[in-house]
Length: 270
Picture 1 (spheres, rainbow, N blue to C red):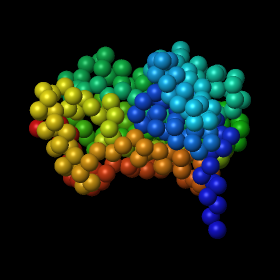
Picture 2 (cartoon, one colour):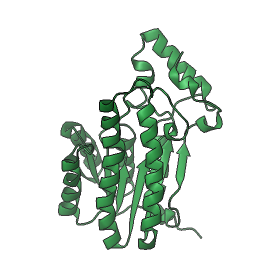
Picture 3 (cartoon, rainbow, N blue to C red):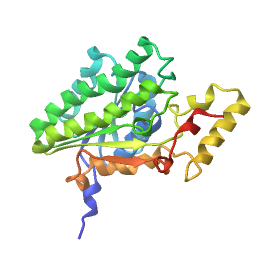
């Protein structure tokens, strides 16, 4: 019989980037509840402290580390802090990302660099550094958070869409190279989730237009609603646990059925 304890993360050490809010925060809480010691990173220590405090209040262990993963000189901060306190890293969740709006004809070089430095360059080299630790340990899990915008074109966030397509390829490349060392690398592909990453779809519109844009988005989804951050956590626990020991290089889509649709034009609003 299958042993449900394989879903436990007891005594595992996890780093969750972008762990102060939204999907990253929900995953951090979920990992702590499953028994993991959680290192949360983002730019603002104050927000991270709030996440860590809640984990500690629930009896878990958490370490907040302020670091901007779009800056190469800060990538090592979270790694050094985790290794100094816990001595190992078993799980990495690459969740930190940015999605400024701009179509392919509107985006300038600065916007492109901001998106790519965090969403791709930072993710790639942060994963590379931690993959070396996992390789030496003989085990590890890397979970990249992509987006349906990386699978279907989403013109209002052109550079973001390109970056998330790149995240899916990074997963495959790292998975292929690390498979012999018992390190699994996978992607979670969320659809529209109620977070500050999705808000720009309607938040810059006048109030009534914004409400109509959100209603249009929800109405166009087969499930007729947006997802919640907690609805990503189950897949994140599976991919971080021993239950996924034979799963690597794959994508788990959690999108309310969005990819069943033939177009993402409704993402543009009314």
